[in-house]
Length: 197
Image 1 (cartoon, rainbow, N blue to C red):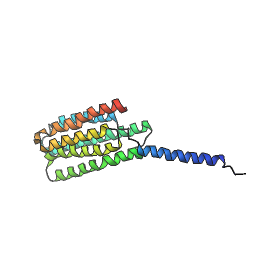
Image 2 (image 1 turned 30 degrees about the vertical axis):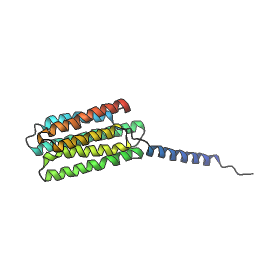
Image 3 (image 1 turned 120 degrees about the vertical axis):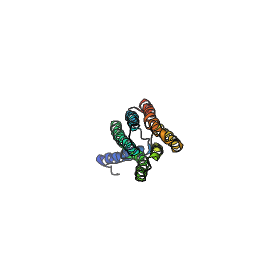
């Protein structure tokens, strides 16, 4: 007579199989925890930053104004990302969330490095193009693991950055407001409507 497996071993095997299935779903899915409301808030911050930056007494003060806005916006966006992922029961550090971050971070890090180099070389007038292109590259890359609106947002930033590269320096704040303000508000609203807060 064939021996029967004890029930607890079958249950252990079933749990292990479910873990494998969960992992496969996590790693193959799209990261949908992009925070629409936080993205809109980032856009509002950029509009405020543009208003303040236009009053800066010199190019270095102007650059530091935008850097401060970027830091605050990153905190708002990061907190929104964390909260939405938690509410959806997903992780930013595993599966599709990890792919999203791995796509996002290199472009942002490159932008930060180039910013430091340009400030050190006293070339702050080049920063709008660098910031828009770097952010666009980061969003486009992260979008490969996310919802369709994210890479579309990145593409719009890339195009705007190319415009900034050939536009007069005086257009810098307007282009930054259109990109970091207008695009964030518009695409954040789309994310809220299609994918929730």
